[in-house]
Image (tube, rainbow, N blue to C red):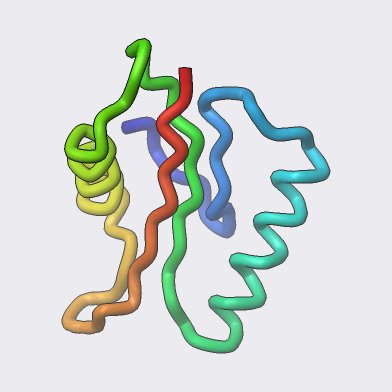
Length: 86
């Protein structure tokens, strides 16, 4: 996983979103965090596959959450939204 950037929660590694879409998603995530303190990562990821299985997507989302530390210790407050694209 590439490293995260402080203050950024939306990453378009698959290059599928416009700048406006990324900015709007970031504003939504920031608003949710301000109200709830939930940590959220929204990521588009090039799968490199013709099709992505639900099981494979779950594994990728878990690897993302663990590698980036999405969520707070001892609090079930981490959300990851993964768009596995190709």
